[in-house]
Amino acid sequence: MIKKIGILILTIILSPILAGIYGLIHDQISYSISPEYFTKFKFEQFGFVEYGLDDKRTTVGIIGVWATW
Image 1 (tube, rainbow, N blue to C red):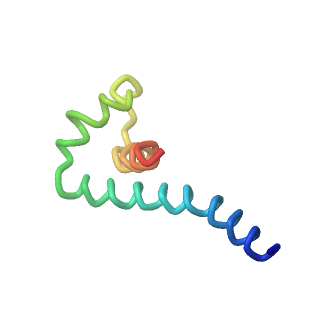
Image 2 (tube, rainbow, N blue to C red):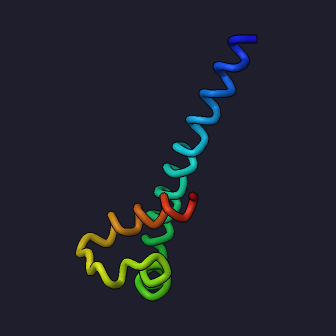
């Protein structure tokens, strides 16, 4: 019984982390295919137009993690 509870807690902790990593990788690949989708739509949707960050890849990674949440 204790082992099952431990596995449940571990699953609850790891699932959002893995989902965030998936979103980060997915959006990096999507940005490689079509950067216009992010620069014209996603940056504005998530409010990154105002910040003016120079590193687009970092911004895309942040958006990927936020989008999974």
